[in-house]
Image (cartoon, rainbow, N blue to C red; front, top):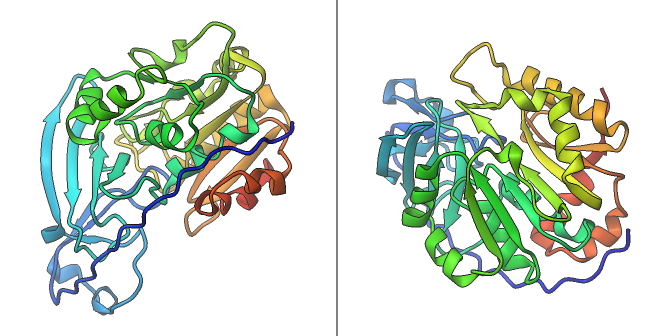
Amino acid sequence: MSLTALQIRPFIPFPIQISHHTYRTIIKLSSKTLSKPLQIKSKSQETHHDFTPQTRTQEDGIPIEDVRIIAKFKSRHNYIRVLEISRKADHPFAGSRLLLLDAPGNIHSISFLFKSLTNTYFDVFAALPPIIPPGPIAILGFGAGSTARLLLELYPGVVVHGWELDSSVIDVGREFFGLKKLEKQYPDRLFIYVGNALSAKVKDGFSGILVDLFCKGSLIPELQDPNTWEKLRKSLRKGGRIMVNVGGSCVEAEDKRRDGKVVMEDTLKAMHQVFGDRLSVLNLGNRKDDSSLALTGKLPDLDAWKKVLPRSLSCYVDMWRPLSL
């Protein structure tokens, strides 16, 4: 498939102010693919390593004084919390709002005040449009709209259809993550549905499907069933692709029997039964099995793909590898 140049809007980087504390309580966060879930470390558990000035990653903790809870309640489907991270925090999430939906504290949406890219798997999702045919893109597991925002801002012609099971999550997105403004800004390009994402369909099929379906801290069981992937494959138009957040060992489920690495492997095996060798995997995190995304279809010309992406997204292209079971 040939790649066409797309109009990419520039991004304005947000300066992070660094602050250091002698003693602090640490919160650890996970964006479902990048680090350990939310944990609180007391002062007595701190090590000398925690006090050493250094460049922090998403796997490092955030001092509790830099975190503000601005919403916290239980809906029918989720334990919803919205956190606001101080701009002064010594952390890549400084200046962001985070949506947590399960007890372990996995992040399901993130937004920054002065930038669009997130340096998380949402950015990998945003690299999909150049390698699919024209047509609507489905987001299964819409959350508060992190992926939709990137697609709409990066690609002027893209139309997004998002499915979210929990209406309260959509309400939170509108209240705290700018989703209401996004809907007003793109009334003909953004369509949101509350309901079962696995029943998603549009006339003539989707050109691309982004799958981000977690429940209680684990990929939903349906994704370990080849029949689910066959159904999703049939909802694609010719040349369409599916990109999936398949999690990994970093994803902590409420049910300890749902080991993140095992669930990831079972999901990839189910996908392989449907897509065969036309399946690629991208690994994120510090370890090979830490977190992964999957992409269906023949791996495209990587150089051509990179040329139509901003540099901040093109860095992910060379990370794709054919699936090896």
